[in-house]
Length: 351
Image (cartoon, rainbow, N blue to C red; front, side, top):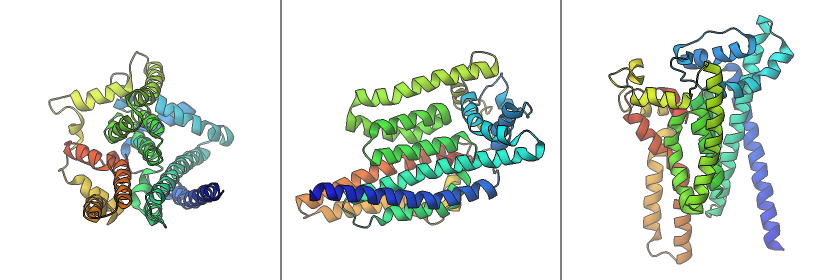
């Protein structure tokens, strides 16, 4: 039938778009893996050094990795050890070959990031077409921004929990756009329990959308079941790694939120509320301010354009606003939350 033929053609077009976007993003992310600097001292000393220790039995230890504080997840490190171990086994442990393990691990991180971002671009395209857009140029613009902006270039290959959490949130956004709200909740659970607990701020809106779309029970199971499983595994790995019963996720929240008297995160510097506005402009150029004003303009246009329009046109407009809300809501929520905190770091925006 013409209906099935049209559906098949649309699916093939979506796959082709995904593969093209992935190819472009993969090139950009491999370039990042090979040429991007390690910008954050935490990445070097809290993640690469411990990974070196797990692979070769030697590495420096920071206070965050001491059993007294136990702020860093052993399960997160272990997952990267799984990635790096085959390269270490193939290349051997000669000093001059270890650097290739470093680059190979970064390439894997970059390709995983490209895969997630290509999925987000493809989901954006499907949502735009479903909303009545014929050329879905917004998906191509998104792909270009992800491929050529400084922010994704830096964050995509960073060995940091916030980068992993950001990939999970991007996957959640793609899933929400596709109407797979349970899958979005699973991704958010991984972002919080395996990556960075403060990513829960960005994940909150996906849970609320899922609650409305699939009901409280299904949302609860999709969010809590994977979170409970990962939390159990994380606590077991942390307890083994640190030599005492402990859980890094709870420890880092306790340290950053409940340590008062200026002895928490603010020890390491504070910034004004507009710090992230400057950071985002550096990362995305004009796309950063446009991302803040465009949704408001789109909403206003939808309201004005809906006056006197037909029922079909009004329904289409509402569908577009609904899609926009799903995809956009985590950004202003996270931006407002992190801007309100005294201690700010660029990597917090990787989410």
